[in-house]
Length: 266
Image (cartoon, rainbow, N blue to C red; front, side, top):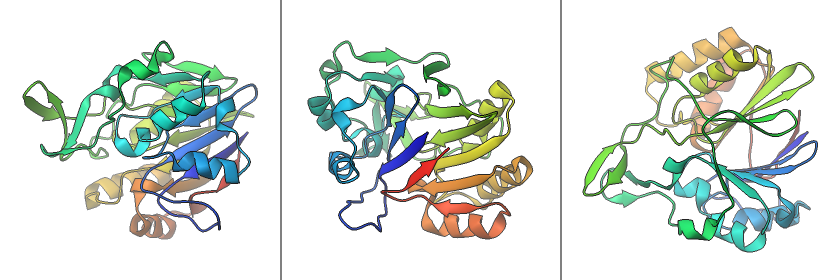
């Protein structure tokens, strides 16, 4: 299987566009899968440069309802008429940072028609590709809820990201974990995958929401990863460049920055 990063905060390759957001494209055994859409339609432009036809995508997974992961959804729907869309209902909640800045999806849910598949339990969307709906907070320090709100009526409440999904890919007796933003904690997501599949970990890939983490959160993640010993770690987006440098220094296994245009084989 090949994973292509269609858009991310950084880009090095000529002809591609970067933006604050994330979108992955996966070529599975039988299906072509998109994981998030960035914050605009630029991921589609990048896909064309990379030789990927977004109209042929069979399944779209929405990790959570923030604008930098769902902003390209309307452009996707105009181009692709067939893909099933996997998400949780709470992804359409009115999401805010603080009580003034709206950061949710502005998409009219009616545009989704009958294409939505609501994820309530683990679903295998292609051979060995599983959508994971739960990340119990086993590692309590590793979460990023601070300042994030949901508006319900006239009231605001803390967003604990019950809408967050991640992917686990099982191949050749190993598993890989792909997370888009890890608000519920990358260590908690990995822990749930390990508990479910009981396999050694090859690749951990995605945004880990460590850019503004406390030292305690960062230390807990590092301690968990040192014990886990995955074969490789690819960081993107909300992990932050500074934390990428720290992780590369603090961990003994390969750590790389995964930017726009990267292709990874698992």
